[in-house]
Image 1 (cartoon, rainbow, N blue to C red):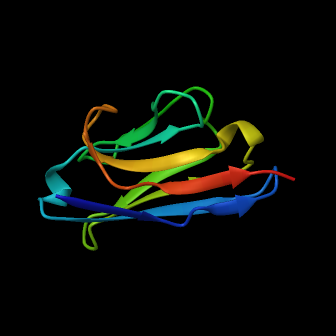
Image 2: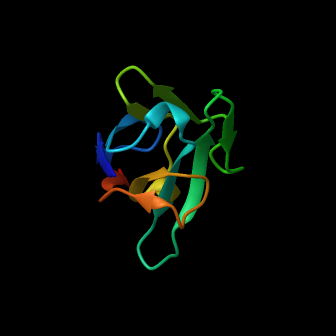
Image 3: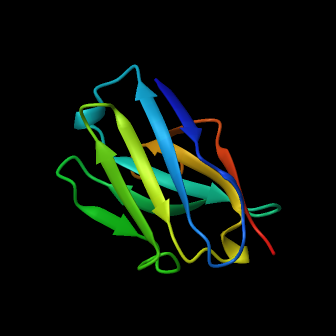
Length: 114
């Protein structure tokens, strides 16, 4: 299993970023996928998930701002993040599974700062 995240960076409050995750080594289309994040000094927290049917799930503090999606033909997972806040600053991880204990990639840093 390999999960490689990209798309992180530095953005001003109110800005947007789109994270990508390239998946390989497993049947992507048969896997529930998720995003999680870990802020400095904090535990990793679940952010969003998408099941094999395309149903999406969001943590309360990102609902309405973040959109998870997947491309099963390209084995890609995405997270569109809008209206970013400083509290969104964290390392974002792509996970194969439903929980933060699932297999994850190396992460991509998102920093929201003016």
